[in-house]
Image (cartoon, rainbow, N blue to C red; front, side, top):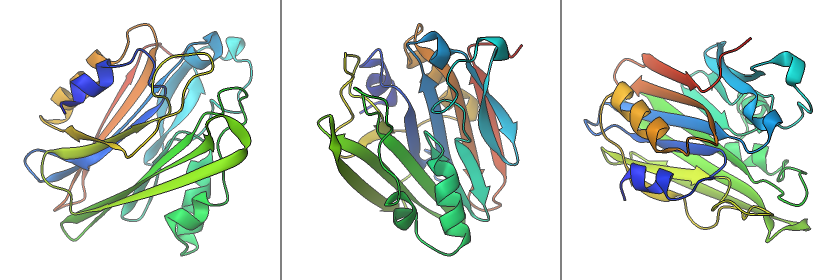
Amino acid sequence: MELSAHLSASTYPGRGIILGRSDDGSKAVIAYFIMGRSANSRNRVFTEKDGGIITEAADPSKLEDPSLIIYAPVRVLGSETIVTNGDQTDTVYDFRKAGRSFADALRTRTFEPDCPNYTPRISGLVRVENGSMSYKLSILKSNEGNPDSAERFFFEYDEPAAGEGRFIHTYRCDGDPIPSFAGEPERVALSGDIDAFTETVWSNLDADNKVSLFVRYIDLASGKTQDRIVNKNAKI
């Protein structure tokens, strides 16, 4: 399915990760976006840091609870780029640095403790080396809102086809409580250079709820990166 159709299908997919390969086959594609319904969730921007990004309060004077909204969504370790929707980025980074696996790291974590939504933790890892690429995705979620029952799912993709990606997001749609994503990461078509792709993602997210977007293209031959950040708010 076209990415635009997936993105526009819901007013509130929450936070989302898109990983895949550009349509010319030459680049790894990474996108991460955040959305918000509350004033605290909407009061955020993405800022570059140490080869990745962090979330910050757009207006620090209005920051309420930082525990689940301030974190490093993207970190880089050698040939690997880690992208997640929470502080499990650091868990994956530490485990990979110690030579342990992506799955090992996430088996030590669970969904967010934000009753009654119990927001899933979604995570990805992209590896680019010697002109080839692979990526992994994971979701840690409650069993239909049961806080005592965790479900962990892992997906691996080696040498994805040109122009093909996978999209995973925290919520199926808006609601109260908000229903968690279910099923396999959605197959999506990827097209265009980084600016065209960034525009496709940003323009198809709900105008009221979208907050920030990060996009990275990694050249498979050279490892060089191109980044784009779009913030709805300006940092004060």
